[in-house]
Amino acid sequence: MKTIRWDDAWRSELFTRIEQKYDLIIIGGGITGAGIFRSAVSAGLKTLLLEASDFAFGTSSRSSKLVHGGFRYLYNKQYQVTYESVTERQRLLKEAPALIDPLPFNLPNYAAYNFPSWLFQVGLATYDLMAASWNHRALSYEQMQQSIPGLSPQGFLKGFRYYDAILDDARLVFRIIRESVQDGGTALNYAKVINLLRDAHGNVCGVVMQDMARGRQGICEIPAKVVINAAGPWGDEIRSDLNAIRKIRPLRGSHIILSGSRLPVSEAVTFFHPRDKRAMFIIPWEGTTMVGTTDIDHSGSNFQPGLEPFAAAAEIDYILEGISTLFPDSGISHEDILSTFSGLRPVIDSGAATPSKESRAHQVWVEDGLVTVSGGKLTTFRIMARDTLDLASQVLGQRIKVDRRLPLIQPINRRQLQSLTAPKRRLFGRSGQEANIIINQSSSADLGPINGLPALWAELKYAASAEAIMRLDDLLLRRTRIGMLLPMGGRELMPKIRSAVQHELGWSHQRWQHEQAHYLEIWHKYYSPNPGE
Picture (spheres, one colour):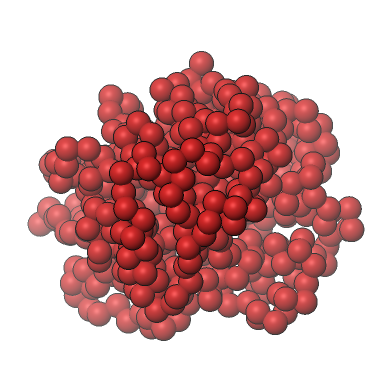
């Protein structure tokens, strides 16, 4: 295993040689860019990935944490999106055990939905047939209560159980990028593309990049045979260099996180909001209960990558209203919220009347040599990578040979996983073969949980030492998620966190104080129960 520390020394050394010409430069370090990066590196291309903020900073750390077919898309007649998604879900479940795990979903049907139960039955049968499986069944109210206690009996008609999958979205992105770097690719976070280079014919032939850690001292020109714009919701900002017409409709989806003991569910719930019948989820995740998501236009906002979306008060009230209807005796209120978070979906704008009517299909196109990909969903990132590189081949003038049978995630022996303890299995899922390094250098205390969460001190310490941490929020909100799972973003635990990771990060006392203050400011503004205040 080739260990890459990704520290300041590595970053400084890289900048001495970064202006060499690349076959491919990818703009955007979310799941779409990561998938393209993995495929391009495996095809033998000299590839550079540039992310303006942190890896998975945008949409890809703010999803509903699901690898799913999108059962609700059948209702909108998005059959191709659903088919691709369930097919990819099945493949990812096989390729990434312990990172992506099957999760039962309970779907109660109520009279208020005005939707006959037989149509749910037909929809779930179609859903399973697309995945070449048969893994759903009808449930009585009593059966559903066993895993979903407190569910409202008022107007209950029939229940159903089906299966999708759950993951830590940010860890999937980082593992793919990390393994691609180990195989010869180059990836940089906090490396912002500020301009596109053009040749004598006006075609894009590289980028002007600014190292955000070094400011004006870190600006350089990097030539490339092909540049791919995978910047998600900010893709139109990259295209503005070409004076191109905007094509992306950024849609905001917000979630709240509650203590697992406050709303205890051992399986997920799909329900329809009483106000507008929009499908929503209640999901057990990382020892907590997550509820969402909304789907609204993110208009009138500044789309600079360093600025984060956050849940509006009306969105939080909307989610709480859904919970109180489904669990009328729970008494869940605003005071029960541990944290909130919001992400932007980079949906292709078709002019649909409402956000939920927009297609989740992806598109790939070329303008003046710049290849842009947008739309899609986390589950279909492999298909998006394939289609993007197919079009990039035309710009490159040669076929990019990607073995489509190869997994985009390095395989782990399933039998080996089954014999491991839960903490060690977790490490292999989240870090791949590097888990061997983490386990070998960790004490028994390091392999213990952080404040009763599934998260381990060992993964926190290793991330600090070897996972491209530039800011404290990188560590607490993306490499690990404890900033979203602990009360007040983990403020009370901060002395213990500091003791565990400050040496690994190589930060002085002054630097730590600055980073801690900055992190808590970010948490209060974007992730707290009252974001934006």
